[in-house]
Image 1 (cartoon, helix red, strand yellow):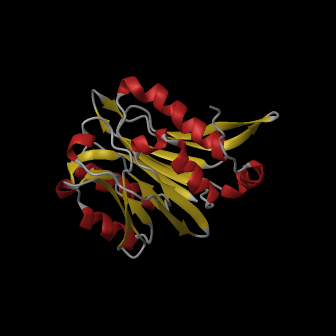
Image 2 (cartoon, one colour; image 1 turned 120 degrees about the vertical axis):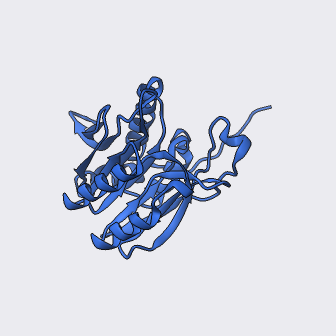
Image 3 (cartoon, one colour; image 1 turned 90 degrees about the vertical axis):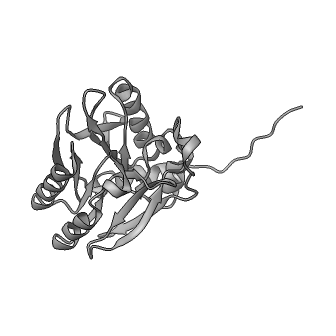
Length: 238
């Protein structure tokens, strides 16, 4: 499956770069969290038109709508199929907004795909539950500043390793504090072990990239990990 990652500076560039990804064969396009300030600033109708024109899914990032942080899922008919909401709010978001209470999984071309917004990735329970429900690719819009990128990537790689799923991250580009560094990982063999292998990266400039993910290449790793998963109880001693 071809997935486009778009790292835009403004709305007009976002639409242009999204269309460039679609022209390059992207079947899904992902944008970052809070690359624009509010839902009113999001050119949602234009993204819907692009999704319909190229019969593709578009996740135009995650934005504040005045109540929560939401991530619209636009389907190939140009319709809003679902709205993912950020479950774990970060910092001052907790003082202004309401948390979401459910995660979104959708299926496209037979592949199960999940959406997790930024800080939600810090909590492994969400991603593990998606894995148990068959998710093969995780899409993550985020807004991580420069001084947090190294630590952020550790979280991303660990979620890939824990669950043997691919992960595609679109991170905000708004220099000088936010330099993008969007990246995608897939589980891949390294000798006797599995590593989170980077398969595409945008770096510290505005742009777009299309990466190709084949879930069949790591299906055996997912099946093996699923078989190894055990339910358990914790007994606390007095």
